[in-house]
Length: 438
Image (cartoon, rainbow, N blue to C red):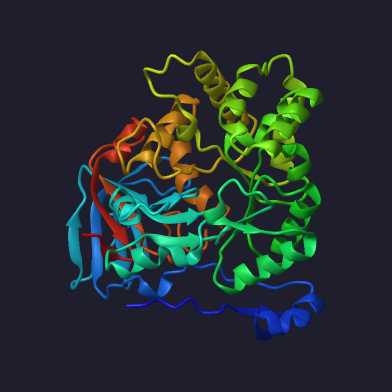
C-alpha cells in the first residue's frame, strides 16, 4: 500500500491556496501564512469509538505539578473527556473500565530528536516504550514509507524533511543543498508544502542563510531548529530560530575567538574533524572563568524563547572508556546542561534513536537518566519530555498533557516515576489516540 504525501493547504489572510511553485509570487506578496502542524501519518492513526475509564489511578498530568492520587480519567472517541477524583467522576455505563490502583498515568512521551537511519521497526519499538510522538529533524519524508507500509502502529510522525546544508554536506543522504538565501526560502516553502512540520538548519550554512531560514519559517508558522558546529550560537539565537540541537552546538561561543576559528577551519576542510575535535574543545572549557559569557548565552536563550535539545546520551563515552579527553569533554557538556537548566533555559528531550549506553530501543530513557544526573528532578524531566516538548513542536494544543479535550496519548506505569526517573521503564501499557497499543 502506498501512502501519498498530499500538498499542504495554506490559509493566508483568509485566502486558501496550494503552496506550490505556481503560487510562489502569491506567497511572496503576503506577509504571513499559517500552518496547522500535524503528523505526516495523521490519517493512518486509528481512533477507537470505545469509552474507556481508567479509575483510581495516580495522574501525573505533564504540567510539572504534584501527582494526583485516586483519580479517574475518561476517554471517549480518542479524546480525554473528563478528569477528576474517582469519588466525583461518574463512569458511563458503557465504559470499558481499567483498574488503575497502584499505577501511574502520564501523557505519552514526545521525542524531539529521533533519527530513522534505515533502522527497521524502531518507531514501533519506541511507541511500545512510551514515545507516542516523535520528530525526525533530518530525513526525507519519503524515507518513512516502508515503516508506514508495514502495518505496525507508529507514533505520531512529525518530520522536517532533509536538513538544509551547504556543500559538502556532512550527511549527503539526509541533506538538501542550498547555495544562497533565495534557495533557502524556496526549499523551505517546498518542504512545508509536502507536510514538513519544522525545518532543520545544518551547520555549514552561513549566518545570513540561517537568518533567511528563520525569517521564512516565522512567516509560515514553522519551528526552525539548528545544529551548529561552526557558527556562534549567540549570533544564531538572535536570528529567531526556535531551537538549538545538541549541547555541542555551543562550542564556538564558549572558547576564545582564535580557537573557535581554528576549529571552524578544520571542520570546513574535513567534516569528520568535529568528531574528536568537539571533545578536545569542551575538555578545555572553564565555566567559572568564563561565567559572564555563559550566563549571557542562557539569558539570550530565555529572552528569545529558544529551546535547547542537548541529546547528551549520544555523546556519552562508554563506561570502560580510557579516553580522558572524551570523559572530560562529556563532563563539561553535562555541566553546561545543568547550568542551562538552573538559569531557566527550556530543555527539550531527544533520544538520537540509539546511543552507546542503553539497550536498543531505550535511548530516550537513557537521556532522561542523564538529565536526572544534571540535577533535574523527575517532575522537571517529565515536564520537559511531555508538555515542553509539545511546545517545542508547536503541538501543545493537541498533546503533551493530560487535559480535557486533548488527544488520549497516554502512558500507564507500574512504578512511580517521581521516585526515580528510571521507573519510566516500568510500562504497563501505552495508549495512542484512545487505542491501546498491542
